[in-house]
Image (cartoon, rainbow, N blue to C red; front, side, top):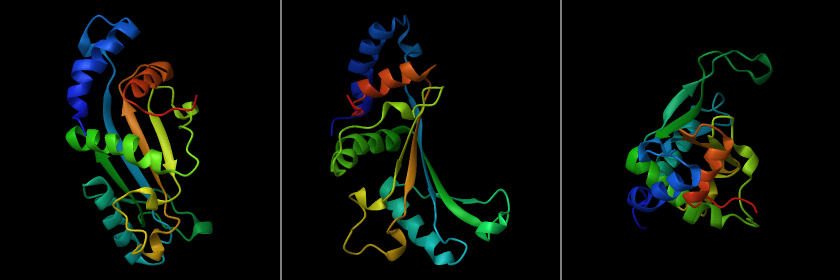
Length: 182
């Protein structure tokens, strides 16, 4: 894999600068961070589940996840405020670009019946969020040795940009090689 940062600096930034009509190359939108969230199912029932998903997420991202706690108590879910129920990883710099390249070139093409990702998943600030129902799509997770906890364990990936709006965010991610539906 060619270094994505070098490609952005030499090819993509000048292209976007011309396409978006921006004078300064520093004003061209870019990816700021990638945030990966995973709510761990049955985390309150068995604390071991949190550790299993934590090690799987660490293998996928190359960085140790932070454990997140419930903000409110919800009686219907037998959930108390402060219970450890999820994991979050924030990737920046080299790890972020490596993960983005892996997402675009390895993970998305591995999906069954993949025809591109939806254009509608942008927020008003140009950030993009996509969710996966299974962790097994990642090459770091060995499907043969996969723990029962990881089956059906999903995650959410948010790509945070400094784009001003949806259209600018779409132009940026398209230029970076994100495969959108036609």
